[in-house]
Image 1 (cartoon, rainbow, N blue to C red):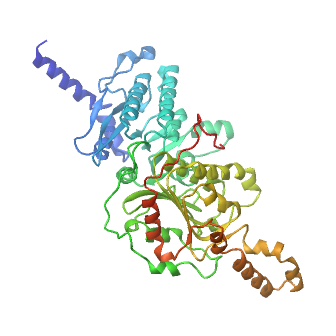
Image 2 (image 1 turned 60 degrees about the vertical axis):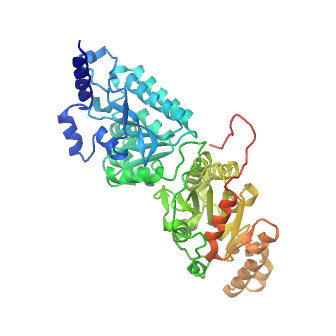
Image 3 (image 1 turned 135 degrees about the horizontal axis):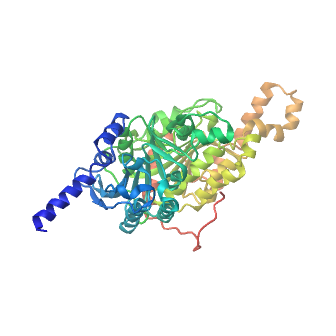
Length: 516
């Protein structure tokens, strides 16, 4: 065969690999409001940057008549490209080829990309849109999934892993996204579940739709599986790019610093008067965050799940920073099972990838009640405690208002290796809140006063003045400084700059045993 014919054959094969499952199936995909596998990559990656691997791979199954058709790519497109000029490795499942079902060859393509990503020290982005394992391949398909799960585990904490669920993701397939660092979904077209509605009905007699069982809203608000949810694929792609802008390439790199015109010494006098006069009245913690971070830009994650704890990314003087904050607008900012799990996961991610942590504290304690105790609040609260204590990245804490009981210890206190701990003058740091404390400390006075409301209020204020004050903790060195709220931004930036080259290591062990 002449070189011209060989080149023509190559061009024809490459063109064939780009057709997916054919024009009819591609059109059906678009009609559902979804991009095709290749169109997704075009919209995510910088123009012209995609380099494809294994375009000519086909399945190797000869059972059930599968040897009659061998579509190129075998249902997944893999390769590397750039986002904002930074290298990323990607795979995009193609639902138009065998419903995106996974074969052994398909799994090998994904594993190859993941190995390259770890070796090159670059993020892995998976676009999931698959009907699950290719049944015709039997245990080979299951082996393929297990191979991918292992790669996910071995890459964890080494390079960022982000999963976009853009269609179905069911059965064992859900465990790959679940192991990754961030899961993103689209309302109306994305869903994840281990067992579908038919199986649920057979086993439990429950009638449930696909959306009710595993839709984006379910995983954003109830299960906590999804970190980000969007109304369209274009919106989720924008969120992906924004998320990546805060992350380093790998665990050996620092997060990318971005230029900002927001002055480091900017003060905000309105912060001095932002809190309500009554310590029992709620306010929106996000308002404080927006006032102190660069350009008011706070990128919240897991917003719909455990809203009593806020987590997300922001920048201080251009440096990406992880934010953990109690939210008085939801359950008074109390820590419960879900909030503890949410916070622990986020803290551990930031620590793995050299992202400093800033904690804003206003916590009345842990949620009481049988539901929380039976649900494992001891074990789950310990996760958040463990995560903060284990983290070696720079850690700055600002106690805004309440810091009561064990929750004070857990929320990145000085006692678990926080580097810099500030308090506003409004901070109340104590074993418990005044309502419960006066019942114990001032029992005789309450009895003598006839239990009047006036007596109770006087004793509560006396308790606050004596115990629930930041100066009591500051006298012991547990608070580094009591600061004017207006200066919070400047004090945080100075602290982070001082800690920029922090070197702290945990004991040399195989791995810790976080309470799971």
